[in-house]
Image (tube, rainbow, N blue to C red; front, side, top):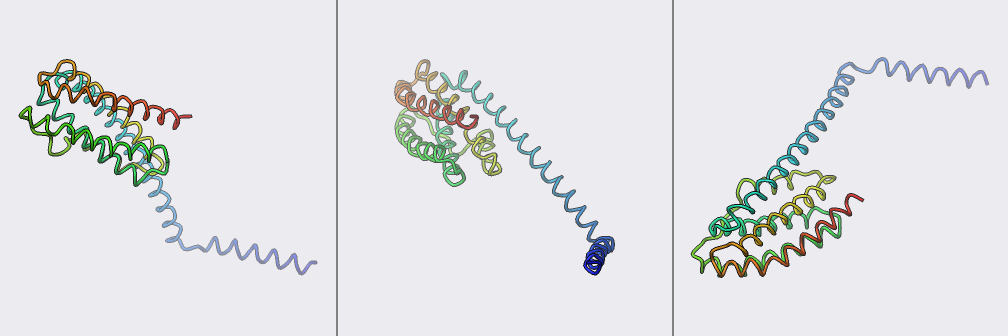
Length: 214
């Protein structure tokens, strides 16, 4: 018994000695790694917060545009409507690849199908009005796409869903406004036809948003 106790004490002493004799460089490296990881996590959190703030600002700008110039000026309407479809399709393609939520995946698949359809429907109406659809996203909408790509796996679903709620509110205001006050009869009719689909999309994504909070 005394022999066993002696061996245990010796083992503990050896472990303690090993810890004390751990090279200073290793200890410094561990400390540096821990500090670096903490700084990286802090920077990532700050970046995510900044992106959320930019998305919120972008949504407010879009809502104002949809309810002012976009509601009656044909060129502004065409630019915003075509970019809205373009953004929806690009965002949905990212969501299809990244989300693990079956509701969001199904919604994203619907976005690709429905917004491709509305783009195709509006093309001849835009041409007849003497207008040209946007060739690419503006900085505001490209920012939304960039934020989706940069979102962490843990934040992705909420980022996508929050963007979609804001984007569909904006699109609904834009379409309803031009259908009511626009100057081109063909585009007014096209906008009116798309309104029920966008309203359905908004209702659906708001339901998904509520489910993420529960």
